[in-house]
Image (cartoon, helix red, strand yellow):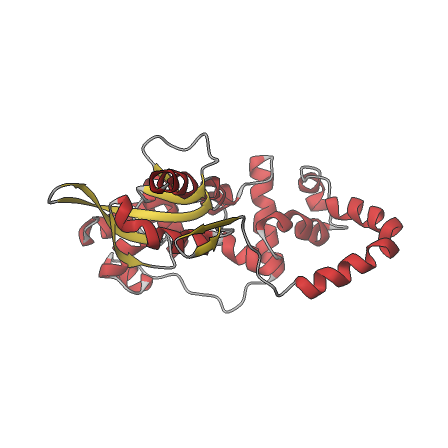
Length: 278
């Protein structure tokens, strides 16, 4: 567990690297300290910044799309490649979540930038580094098949608001396999005691859960857990490997996962429990 002074020291160290007080996201991407640990001492981030002897950054009411895209483009220019979400989190000025909310997802930022840079000679070199837009190719293909897909679109519209189910498994009242992170969390709650975990707290920030894991009779150890549907989502979401102790997922598909980061694959747990109960 990180102590109050360790948190303040980390804020100061990162501020010296940046030349200013770090933002909330900048701190957690660099410090390796959980959001839960900080929130225990400082419910508001600016209170932590002030306690470290620094002046909080002023929040802007509304960033313009052009400001976000310009900084993203400069990151591409420096790297000579399109940055991953994690790379931009470490090198860009803004929070990737802001980009995702503004432009409809991280994968659509290159297309948004291409539209922003259209006709601007200063961005020609950056545009040349971007992947070919699939949207144009798909539009051309869809033009020829528009009539044949009208019925399919109508059918999809009817199904849009209906839930999606995983394969049937009928495990202790859960009729279907999880198809998202929420399903993983629910299933972990059903199995936590059998897996040797006792949940202390849940939160929306990283990591998702503080728990204690049973080591043996009368011995428990505190662990931070991040829930993911697939283990490689941990990497794709840009989470620092040293920010938690375990990933709980439905499917483990991240071969390069750091060895010191435990992975609990619930699909395997279900199979072993089902075999034991037969």
